[in-house]
Structure formats: C-alpha cells, structure tokens
Image (tube, rainbow, N blue to C red; front, side, top):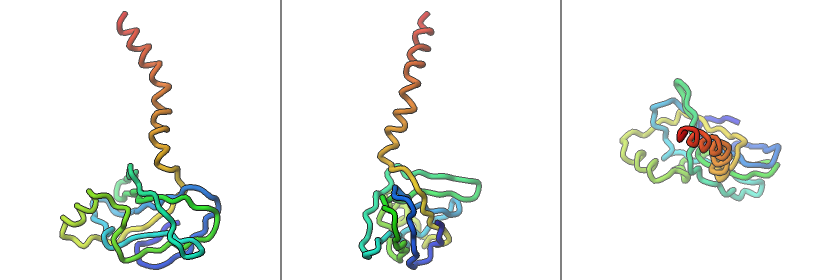
Length: 148
C-alpha cells in the first residue's frame, strides 16, 4: 500500500498476521516535513496500535528517490485505519528532531508512505551473527595457513 502524505484516514486490510513497517519515500536531498506529518494505525475499535520505533533506520536509495523505515507494528489479520495527521512524527530520533529544528525550511510534503510486510528489527543482530558464524572457521583456517 502506498499513499501520499496528505492528512486523512484510509482503510487498511491486513490479509496475514505479522510485522508490518511504515516507510517514507521521497526525493533524495530534500527535507521532508516529518515535523508536520505523523502516521498511526488504529484497530476496528478505534484504539491506537502500539508501534515499535525503528532503531537501525533501514534505508533504500535509488538515483533520484530514497526510502526509510519509520516504525513497525505487529498486526493481526483484519481491518485497520491508517491515519495521517498534522502533528510531528513521534518515531523520529533526537538527531532527526535536531536537524528539523535547525534547518529553517518548512520541508516538503511531497512524499509517500508505504506499508510493507517485514521482519522485526530485533532479529537483525541474530541474522548478522548467523552470517558471520560460518565465516569464523574459514578465517581461522586462513590464519593458520599464514603461520606456515
């Protein structure tokens, strides 16, 4: 699902329970107005779902556009409301907020929100360790061969 950054409420259907992340997508080297836009997800009872703030802040950059993960949720199968509001984004870190305050620009509202099925961030250190562990015996062998 991809939506522009204009305030409003949109229907969101989750077909499979799991972790879903909210990404922002916009033009590279352009300050986005995240201090003037926020996004939240509400369940069918209109109660706000708890979000996990993105710690590693994964990014994907192309030639002209870039994307960055803001936060993620665990959502069960069902109907939700995706709400874009006119308030500061609560998932921004201290460094992001300092930049937004220091730059005199109002920022561009010409960006999109994307919702993607994702893995939770707390798995990333385990994935990296899983990639490194098979390399360790090879590194040990190389070091022993260099001693000869």
